[in-house]
Every structure is written in C-alpha cells, then in structure tokens.
Length: 371
Image (cartoon, rainbow, N blue to C red; front, top):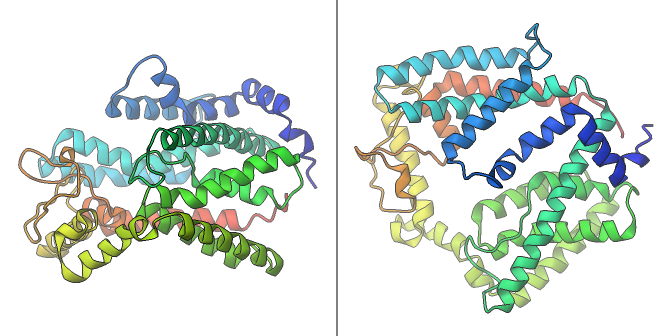
C-alpha cells in the first residue's frame, strides 16, 4: 500500500511541484493561457501556436534519442494524406492548419505526458492531479461568490449561458472518489461537497443541454460500475434531495425549455423552435449528403484538411456565430465531432483515432493499483 498521507499536505505539494520540473512544466502547460493573459492578450491562433510550441519543446527536452510513443508517428504520418488533399482542394491555409492541430493535438498531448511522467512516480501523479484539483476548487468558489453577487444585484438564478459555476469533469471525479478515502479533514470535505453539488446544479442554472447530458451520462457510469449497493443508496438519496430542491425553487418549465424546444424542433422540423439544435441537424444532413455525392472517393480520406461544407441540402437559418462562415458561404466549424472526423480525415482517420482510444483505455484498465 502506497503511503500517501504526506502528499495531501499543501506545503509538500507546492514544494514538489516547483522543484520537480516535469510537474512544474505540466502545471505551466495546463494554465499557460491564463498566465500569458496576465501580461498580453493573445489571439486564439497565437495561443494555440504557443501551446503547440511548448509541447514540442517538452517532448524533446532531454530526449535526444526521440523515444516517443508510436501513436505520435502514426498520427503525424497519416495527416500527410488529408493535408495534401486539403491543398489540392484549395481550402484556406488557416483552416488547414487548424484541422491539422485539431487531429494531432491528442496524440501530441498523450506523447508529452508519457515523456514527462516516465521520470515520475505514482506519488508525483497523485500530487499533480490534486494540486490541479485544488486550484480548480479555488476558481470554483470565486465563481460561487460572483454568482451570489449577481443574484443580489437583481440577476436571475437561471440564465442561459451566463454566470455559471466554474466546474469541470476531472475535478468532480477526483473529489467524488476522494470521499471513499479518509485523506482530508472535515472542513476540506465540506468544500469538496460544495463543488460536487455545484457540478450537479450548474447545468440547470446555465440551461445547458450538453452539460446536462454529459453529467447524466457520467452519473450513470459511476452508479453502474463504481459504487457498491450501500453507496448507490446514498447517491440516490442525494440526487433526490437535489432534484426536489431544483423543482421546488426553480422554474423548471423555463429551465428545461431548451430540451422541449429541441424535441419540437426535431419532430416538427421548425427551425425557429431551437436554432441551436436545428443547426446541428442541418449540419449533419449537409455533411452526410456531401460525402454521399462521391462515396468511394470521399469516405476513405474525407475532403481534406480545411474542408468547408455548404447548406446545399438543408438551409442554415442561424444558431451559430458568423465567424464560422467563410466568404464563399461555406462553414468550417463542425459541432458534431465524429462527423467532422469523417468529413475531413475520412473513415481511415476516424478508425486510427478510435483504435488509439481503445488501446490506450485497454492498457489503463489493465492497471490494478488499489491506491
């Protein structure tokens, strides 16, 4: 059994983070945008360039033999084909580079993590994740304070896409499973409980369909695979209490109206009911039909990096920022990510990505470290 009691001492964590360079570089990469934002306002393009440059510097630091994960090379070599196809189809250079980065980013980040933590021990990984988690905890309570001030100033508790709580999946899972181990004092656990409650109610107060679906899916996985019968009982009681609170003190018809509007938009094909949902449905139809125009030619490698789609088959009547449109009327950003993979990288690109996910998860699942 790993002795981890000292890892959760703040003084030890800070000391370890700032004296062991893999951990320090990881924290810097995680928050590079916020740190640079203190001194200069970077454009999105500049921010991505900085991030990718830092990752490349990271994987080559004291790694002169270029001992990198095979998926780094697989992802990079594969991209040469859709990259060439994007140039041949004369798509915009900026869009080509954006799609290159979008596909390669997971492989680059994964390889960087392996290079970094090849030099680390399990206690360093735990230290890193909890250090990041408690930074998020601080941000969360700042957002809670901002929300309270907003409500006291006359703002609504429920506001679409405004004044939400700063919660994320990874810290939630970290804090949720921390309750299974007696590693913190009562006050710390009280703070963690506040974060978990905030994670549950946040999709309601910002009226987010995506966050609500993600949260429900996450809870189903936890309930089915990670809790025993006793824990499932307590978990169910907690959800019932929070649900009761939500339905008694919040106008749920207004809060969940985005779900009912999305349903009506799909059933009646009325774009005005929910432009956000209708846009995504139109996006899928236009992309699918474009691929089916020449299936043998387009499905293997897609239309190349930077490919645009047009509302040839189903009109687009709003629900997306105008920044997504190009001068010729084509749309670059694709919300439904797996359709984006097939459209730009083809079935081969999607297959490579899914195989990478599967093999990585299989290796992680084979680890039986009870700590």
